[in-house]
Amino acid sequence: MTILPLNPSANATPEALRAFLAKCRGAAASDGRPRLVSISVEVAPLDPLAVVESIFEPEELHFYAERPAEGWAVAGAEAVLTLTAEGPGRFAECQQFIDDVLERTIAVGEVTRPFGGPHFFGAFAFFNEVEPGEAFPSVRLFVPRWQVSRARDRTIAVANLLVEPGTELDALAGKVWRAHGKFRAFDYSAPDFSERPAASGGGPSAMAEAGGEGSYRRAVARAVGMIEEGRFDKIVLARCQELTAPGRLHPLRVLNGLRQRFPDCYAFSLANGRGQSFIGASPERLLRVEAGMLLTEALAGSAARGRTASEDAALAAALLGDEKELREHRHVLTSIEKRLTPLGLRLEHASWPGLTRLANVQHLHTPVSAALPPGVRLLDVLAGLHPTPAVGGSPREAACAHIRGLEGFPRGLYGGPVGWIDHRGGGEFFVGIRSALIDGSRARVYAGGGIVAGSEPGKEFAETELKFQALLEALLA
Image (cartoon, rainbow, N blue to C red; front, side, top):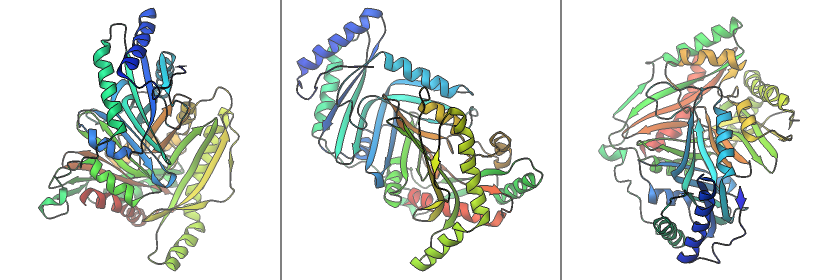
């Protein structure tokens, strides 16, 4: 990527913008290859979710993610460049796409700030291929036309443009200039969430278990039998509830509820440009790469939260001493070590798990860190980690081969990596769990749990009920 020493804020006139774009068009004409032009400016504090609400169009791609407890949020809308891919080589195809785009990118402005410069947003389905009729492809990465982010007390707005040898500059410069003015004096108009699902008295008009009543308990019992037969040590099985509401389910209204309920989670929304959105509040980071350092985590083993401090502490102590839950957690940690050690990573982590506490559930949690060796990139690590035993099972191949048959429905993006990669090779991906696929007045809501030797179908069903609770409350609020 070429970074030019220009300050867009100091040269903020329509004439200066057009002159800059003319130089970029000249570069494109020199070799016949279009240039991605990325302009980053710091603006007055904005709420990125409010920006997405303001410009939301069901027919456009968008990406939104935030983690309130960490003080950041990022939004990208519309697409200037897009890649879709499938199959076992999809991670490598994404890396090649990123490399090709950055080779012909010209960037100016606050490129070195957090979330400055071009970002590649996207999501990977759980499996390498998706089934016909699914809402999202096996992977889609896109560079947004407009990006707004908040990191602590600083807001960065990014405009990404594709400049070709024959691009008409006046129209392009005018569009960027209008957006520049909008971000500097943003109008927080109230979004239209008028079609509320509770409008006809509250609650869903229909709720059905994918696979039929009792299907999850039966699947758990079958999985325990397979474990006893030695086919695998652990498998993660999801439930899917199909909800029909009395009114349209607006994904961003639901997201507002999730961000408030779960400030420690990744609240997220992805739109496919065809009216469907995948939203959720995920507690699980898959990986973060920053300045050559990797951070990942083992998150597995669950218990409810208590109604009082004493009850909560007692449940936490029981979780930390529960052999079945500790065994499930060790499966995840061992798999991370197995998958990343061949890449040359020297992993560091505590010898005993701690706890991550959410509003309605608590989990065993072990952070893992390592320096990335030369030549190892974020997508190399992502390809090695996904799917972890926290969403797949162990041994990975043996367990994942049985998931579709036991669950009885396609997972789509559920359990897959969701996140972004920046122009420096850093980025962050989380796991698309505690999630729902929204399509008009309908939603498919997902939750799952790890099945190991000794798992009891009734208890596993109750654990998924806990995980469903907050999502259903946000959908129907």
